[in-house]
Length: 141
Image (cartoon, rainbow, N blue to C red; front, side, top):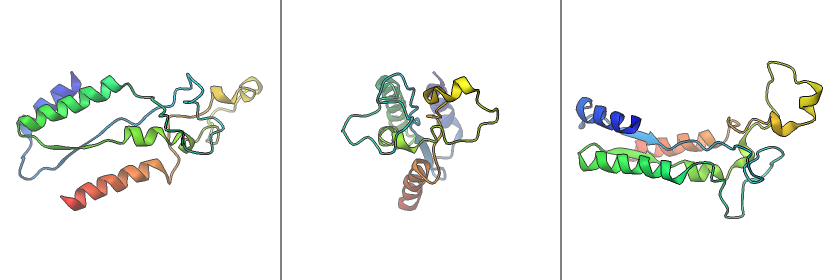
């Protein structure tokens, strides 16, 4: 519903001759619910051909459907598909190597998976690749 509202607003409010639209797919989030998606103690990308699958395919399908509908109505948006390529970089999260604002308890220290940060990304790293993709879209247009 939010994407449809966004698309409707764009159709009515942008100058299509002067405005370039970009939409980036969602950044995957390693949940730790299975052995593959746990970022703790990972030092290499996933090379097995198996993806993290942190993102629901139907959600990505809805995004693609809304963007296709926008294009049929004359609103062109460059869709930057970063989800799948980012899923392979399970090693690119800070994991346990981050600033803790509240010191960990001794019990927490014995369970590093419970405080491993699999949401944020290390820099330089994956977000820089996203920026390179955006830069390439801008330069080519």
